[in-house]
Length: 396
Image (cartoon, rainbow, N blue to C red; front, side, top):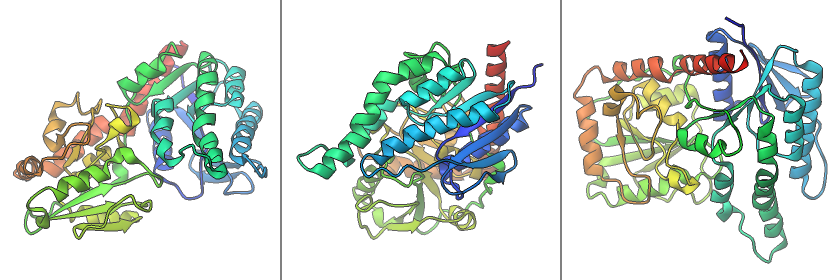
């Protein structure tokens, strides 16, 4: 079989890895573990010279722009131009490009044209719908700063998607979508779209010790993104607990960076902020169950492959979620460890949730069983093996 060589391009890298960068690193490891040869080009402003970051990954500095107005636009266009020229000088002739989609520009279109039929573009959302879902953060009004904000974060990115998405897609080898729903959206502009749901590097997560079901029931919500993410549905979760008559028997731990006003003050809520891996390992072994995304409809989506849900499986933590997961729909053995609720604003029925938790805990081996499901079905090695097969079939 052909030896597949890939260069993974990530355009929002840093010295410190956030959740997205950790995922990209895991994908690169998964590709190499599956038998492909994959190296990572991570573009960043955190270094001044090309720097080895990890095995097979380098950090590459790019020029900063210093415009007084609309610098974000100039910086993005400049970055895409810089990447094109860097790849022309440093990409091997037998390498394909795997690009985590950064939002299209005219310059990204020209990059795709330059490397026609060599780029696989990964898409995590229906881009225009996702941009619109953040419009409340950037409302248009008769205020100069708000007009500029609206232009930068609503009008300009939507305009680029409308104008350049189809021409960009024309030159791709294929797109990767993390759900069937996103694949249908991306197929409007691209003839070849593969559905490969998000995975997890299972070995990076410590399997938990299951606590006893006694005293207060402790719940965890891993926020993930550092920005505002209304689709997480933290407000729905809080309202549901507020309306649960026995809410004094619950404690809710919300982990991650919280935006001001994102979480209301409640006696049962503990905001932990960012936790390092050791701190998170300890907390997850002391909580009873978790929550994943609850209001995905706010991104105009019904389907998602949410990373926190895969982390819960890897650690052996039962959880509640409110969307269609393309993996969990097809893994019958997984369904007993996750409780699905509707994708809307209705109150979560905590009587039903607690019955679910009690049922899971009745099996003394549930933690190990969840871990095994993660290894066999959700691990990046399995996901990237499928990607490798898809690419090889496409190019041979």
